[in-house]
Amino acid sequence: MKTELDGEVGVVGGGVIGLTTAVVLAERGSRVRVWSREPVERTTSAVAGALWWPYRIAPAAAARAWALRSLDVYEELAARSGHTGVRMVEGVLGETERHEVDGWAAARLPGLRAATAEEYAGSGLWARLPLIDMSIHLPWLYQRLLAAGGSVERRAVAGLGEPETPVVVNCTGLGARTLVPDPSVRPVRGQLVVVANPGIRTWTVSTDPATGEMAYFFPHGDRLVLGGTAEDDAWSAEPDPAVAAAIVRRCAALRPEIAGARVLEHRVGLRPARDAVRLERDVLPDGRLLVHNYGHGGAGVTVAWGCAQEAARLAGR
Image 1 (cartoon, one colour):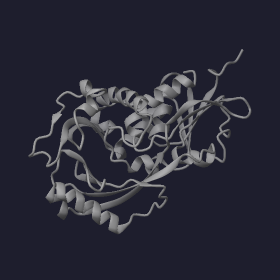
Image 2 (spheres, one colour):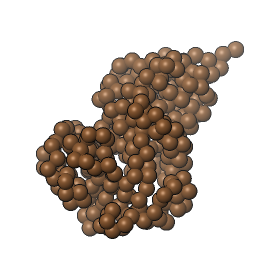
Image 3 (tube, one colour):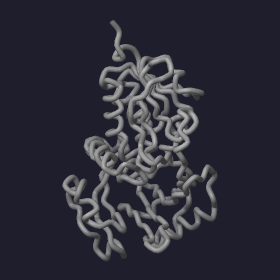
Image 4 (cartoon, one colour):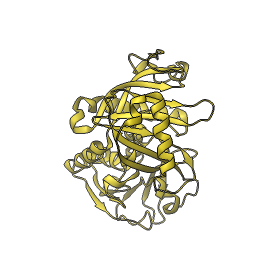
């Protein structure tokens, strides 16, 4: 007698959520096929900075639990940073107080302390967190999936029922808006500027208390990723030169050497925001199991492994 544990699992979506979910499923013994509209290097995930820290994601309690499970994995992957793209890097969480971290993460972050005046002009915390180079990490996830027997096919779908598998996992991010359809999924536009690294080895995340404008920079070897923006319901994927100049200006206010750095690239990504992450079981019209795993806002990388483990459990794996 066949059960939902028999046969393949189809994962729709090839960003960090989809690939990580596929890896977990494949390494638990499922035969996994990923269908992705875009190649790995052109997904929204490829644009990410990407610092481990919950941002623009709800509900907070669940997101923190998923983040901590993901932290376990990233700490292990950092031991092979050249292959995985994951490093443990020190930096400043600006405008963050100790009490905001004590309730959930402080015990897991050795060396967490208040930033000194030399490290940051405002109030903030000095922390050592995973920093992920997505240009390395996404291809590594892809290869890890292949090694576990999974496959990836570049293919757009018109409906979530298209994969002819007993179980389908929906990791389509912003695409869920039309595929589910779920109009509560909306874009939060982020623009980044990549410059030649002038020698910066630590990261900083800062928010202007008066305007709410963000400034952050993440070092990835000879490149420095500068950000950023968070524009609700903005769909344009084209970089705005004025926004780019403002990003460089805000980051240079934190580290003056950024002002003269050579610009290498402009990036735009649309974060898939939702009032709450949708991570739950559903049923397709023909009775097959559908697991939703989307709506992670600006924290897809941060919660990827925790959500993948939960999605696999919901899929019966």
